[in-house]
Length: 256
Ligand code: SF4
Ligand code: SF4
Image (tube, rainbow, N blue to C red; front, top):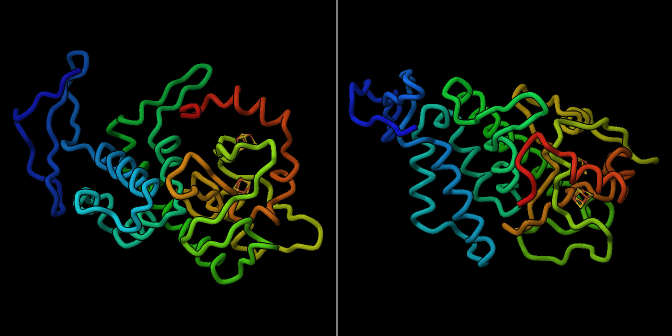
């Protein structure tokens, strides 16, 4: 399956970037796909930003910024440019989870979804934009109200604070790769109505991920930003559920 470059190119897509649609032969049939492919650019940004965060480089390097400019010039992303940029540069945005879910092929018992299929690209881009939007909303709320002793488990001040240790959970985030969970709070806690929708997966028409799942500075560590008041279903998730989840989760790429 090699792209057939330069033959009968259609005019550039609307937008300012370098994007073109080119014919692509698959098993004798001609389909149209974009070059460069926006997912490849996003994956590159995720990879570079992840390394920068691990190396404690607070601001993205020029090449990472250039790649972002290229992504945001795409007509799918230009309407969401400010949101996507703010989320991608945030040290808690779950970059790795975007790669593991929205951009990952899906393998079920009797089906397989290839995420490079041309007809689903716009929907996937909207899922990325929704993840960015909801994450920023959750973070804004938490920065306003979050007390690390009663809501989160670490201060969300952009500095490295040790996460609680000693538990059996290794914070891989696999069990949070779900569309939503019943937003039943622990006793004595009430969630704002908007949080109920965010937790249950209905806060945005393109929501795929729980917006309270944060990543820890590019590490393979994901933490619940409302850990101390997480829904009962999440709080009751024990080692046996974890073992089952980690072997059964076939819908997306397995843990790296
Ligand atoms: S799958 Fe298990 S180890 Fe991973 S985050 Fe969930 S409970 Fe923790
Ligand atoms: S509320 Fe917390 S534990 Fe529950 S799915 Fe969301 S991030 Fe995971």
